[in-house]
Image (tube, rainbow, N blue to C red; front, side, top):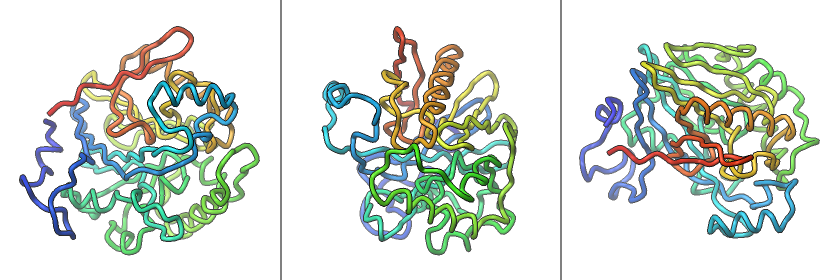
Length: 313
C-alpha cells in the first residue's frame, strides 16, 4: 500500500463525507507509488455514449465484432472517467477535473470527483496545481461545480498547453463525429472555464516540468493542445495519457474516436505513444480505460495489447 493511500484511507465502515450510509460497494480510488511520487487514481463515474464513437471510420460489422468479442453492448456503453491526483516535491497536483454536475446533461453517474476527493480525505484547498490534458468538458467541468472555486487556493496554478487555450477561442468541429448537442456544450463549457479561471492559467508550449519527476508534454491530435503527463522517479515510470488512448485503440489504433478534432493526427499520436510504452514497459493510465486503468502495453503483431496490472492491496 502506498504512503498516499495510507495517509488518506478512511476508517473501516466509515461513511462518505456529506452523506449517510455505507461506503460505496464498487471501489472508486486506487493508489500507486511511482518511486517517490504518490499517485491516486479516482473515478469520476461513467459517461454513456453511442458505440459508434469508438471508431466512426470503421465498418459497422467490424465495430460489432469487436464489441461482441469484448462482451459489450452494441448500441451504447459506459465510458470510464478517470482523474489522477499526484503528490511530488511538496506539490499536490490534480490531473484533469472530471465532468462536473451539469443538470442539463442528465448524467447522474458522472461528475463524482469532488465527492470522491472528499471521501478520500483530500482537501480541495491542498491542491497546489491542476494540469489539463485538454479542455473538453469531461476534463474541466469539476472546477465549475458550484462552490468549488471558493474552496480552491487563490494562488492555484492551472497548467495547459498554449495551443489548447488558443484553440478554444474559435474551436473547429469540422472533423469530429459527436452526438447532437455535444459541440455546443463543449464550446460553452470551455468558454465559461476560460472566463472563470483564465487568470490562473500557466501556459506552456511543448514540454514543462511542474514538479520533481512530473513532466507535461503536448501531443496534439485529439485536440491541438492535448497533452500527456509523464511521471518518473527512482527508475519507475507512469504515463497518464488523457484521451490519446481508448479501449479499442490497442487492437485498432487507426480507428477514429468521435471526439478527435484531428483524427488522423490523433491516430499517429496514439500509435507512437503505444510503441513507446511497449518499448520501455512503463505503466499506463488513461481517462477512458476501465477503472483504475493501470496497465502496460504489449506489441501484438501489427497492433497492441493492453496488459492490466495485478491490483496491489
